[in-house]
Amino acid sequence: MMGAANVDDEEFEFGDETDNASKDARPSTGPQSSTKKSAPADSSVVFSPELLGMYYSRLFPYQMLYSWLSYDPSTANPNNGNSSKTKNLSAMSLSATFPRREFSMTIEPTPGNEVYIRYQSFLSQEELTSAIIKRRPTKIDIGAVFNYPPKDNKSLPSGKLQTQERELVFDIDLTDYDGVRMCGCSGAKICHKCWKFMGMAVEVMDQGLREDFGFEHVAWFYSGRRGVHCWVCDDVARKLTNEARSAVATYFEVNLGSDKNKTFHLSSPLHPSLSRAYKILEPQFAASVLPEEGHGLLATRASWTNLLLTLPKSASPVTSRLEEKWGSSRDKSTPHEKWNELKASLMTVIGK
Image 1 (cartoon, rainbow, N blue to C red):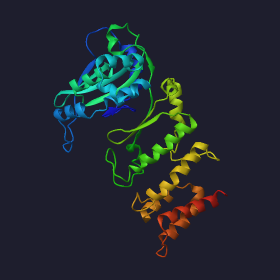
Image 2: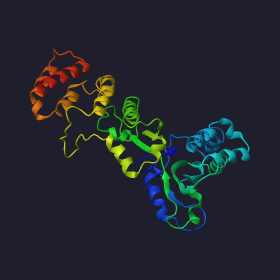
Image 3: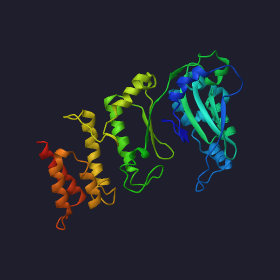
Image 4: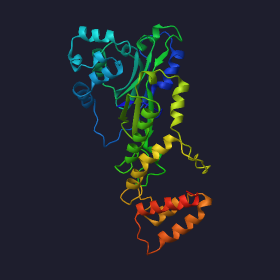
């Protein structure tokens, strides 16, 4: 799998690490590596070095990966993957980006013994292919683009290797939705019901990145376990400063309180990005979150009581009235009808 985004046990986004790479570059021999014991594998997963070798020999998308990370239209010809070394190096000469791209590989020489190798870079697609087939890594991480090929870091003076550009990467994990997943899943466990949250998040963020920031080259990937990664690949995005990257991420944050502080405030009128998000999410919320076949937010007395308890004190008359009405044996309203009634009642309270 290809890692990206946040720093956790499964995936690693090189952005933070590569900024520190130049501080630690000192002359030595061989690639930088570290060894650690891996966690026990999931017994339900069929895995073997032989299967990895077959995958890397027959299925791995070398040409697609090379073309993407080169950012050079001349590398888009699939025939490049079968060309001679001379033609491959000729294509490489047109791409100043790929040879300066860092890769890292996690290999497992013996079962349970992982070796993590950093500062790998390749002149061509052929070199990348050869290295992957030879090492059969259990994990490949894509890093930043440096001012020198990362494989030369040991021969460079300390501090000479500097990050030049890196994609703007977002990591969306389903674990962040554990508080609202009512399907029985939590952690890395996912099902078709809670996975719909990922689809909603992708739609909101994709429109925000394109419409509010003008980005055009936005790629979405399954993270391999519990979420999705967004790679913004525009030239301007790859060259953003750390401050600018943080500003883009902050733009998508909405403070809805915390476990210790339940209070939050949304301005009125809503920011245009939030109004757009509401228009995207509300129909999907009604279809996938409210009904019993979804997350059942308004499908049972216990669930709607929990929802009504989240309303502010100023809406306590609404809470009392709806709790009594919906709890009556005469009430036959559907979850969608309850949602519309709740919205109308709250609009009355705030005078709209």
